Image (cartoon, rainbow, N blue to C red; front, side):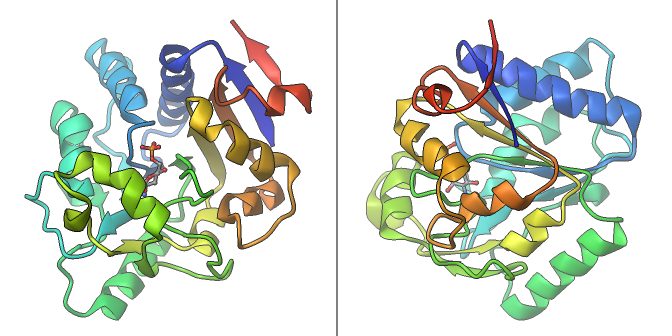
Length: 251
Ligand code: GLP
């Protein structure tokens, strides 16, 4: 695991976008795994900037998002489809036929999950997966105690996640209680992983993810076993881990 600590959220977003952009330049038909949440919005903004400067194109890029709330359709402003469209897809030259986000309105959930996995396989696997991390250590919507061997599946959201994500909804009751998420195994099959964390509320979980026991109780700890993970932190999220590792610090 390579850990890079940068000054602030702005630098974090630039660093992450540069890694994604270089992947796109090296392989214009890359398969990219995208994440949602507040952390990667700056990265998408930077990618749009790099795109507008004419340095990258999404024309041949294939995307798979980590997860989607179950019960929300694409047009719902809280859906992750809407989020991706607002933050990235509508602003670049992506071919929507190459965009994949689990269908939050799927009736046959099992078939939806199987198709999602088959789609990733058919595309040749994910070249680079972007990740955030939940306060409880979840990645995608893989909550504590998830099975490491799980593929894309329906997840029951933790109370902590519902509480944390209620800031995007008008009330806690409105937050869906379930979601469709790539599983840990799906994520671990990605060739490269870039995990982002910003702010002091992530400092402790980042320390445990990197230095703690590998356990389903902290889903992100499994990343210790992946051969190509870059963790990009701002100073606040890196405040504890920086005292315990040879992190690369960039100003
Ligand atoms: C959500 C998403 C995760 C994301 C996490 C952290 O629940 N499913 O993919 O990493 O929350 O979000 P934030 O970046 O807003 O802290």
